[in-house]
Amino acid sequence: GGICNTVQPEVLHALERGGARVLGPIASAVDFYAQVGAVLNPVGPSTGVKIKSVEALMAGRGLITTRWGAEESLRAAFPGQVTYIEWPIDASILAELTVKVVRDAKPADPAAAEKYATQSNEILRSLLLP
Image (cartoon, helix red, strand yellow):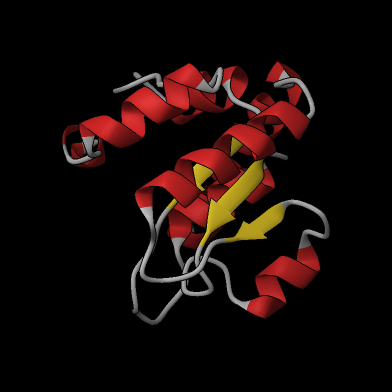
């Protein structure tokens, strides 16, 4: 999405130097989650559920976010998957932390991404159909 156009170039370079692969725009959520072991969602001060955080966790991926990106109850529901970063975010700390989490992440599991897509579709159907 639009976030791909707003990432600071120094953050992209630091991530790539550390071994992370920046994917850019992806055709579908299933394609995305099949390729990644961890997801970065740098949410600023806000309220409410962050769908991108929930998606990442449901797909079995590690999540790097602020305390606004995954409230403590969500973190508790997905033990070991959420890594917090302090706000305001320092670009060099973010890059270092992301590289560490990606290196420590389990390999991407395409089956988990497919399971996420199936569960999401079932939830949507149950909400939309009488």
